Image (cartoon, rainbow, N blue to C red; front, side):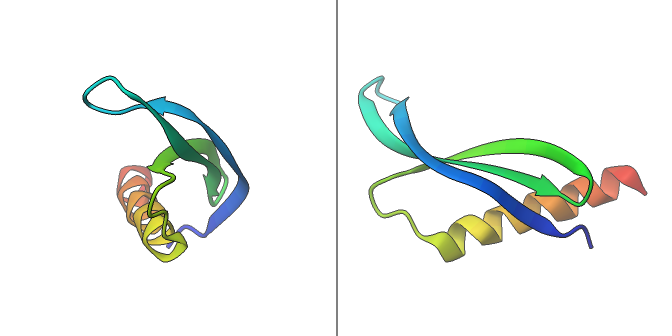
Length: 67
């Protein structure tokens, strides 16, 4: 499995589906030698465990492409 490495976490403005401004957590990450990638999560209710789980799921999908 590709190892997920978080490079940087920062907060920035984003838009909701209703086009309202909201605070987002920007997570920059690598999957092994691939990346960097960026994923955004809502600031309100941000959960580091759920964020890492999502990044690891994406890394597994990426690994399927690289086989």
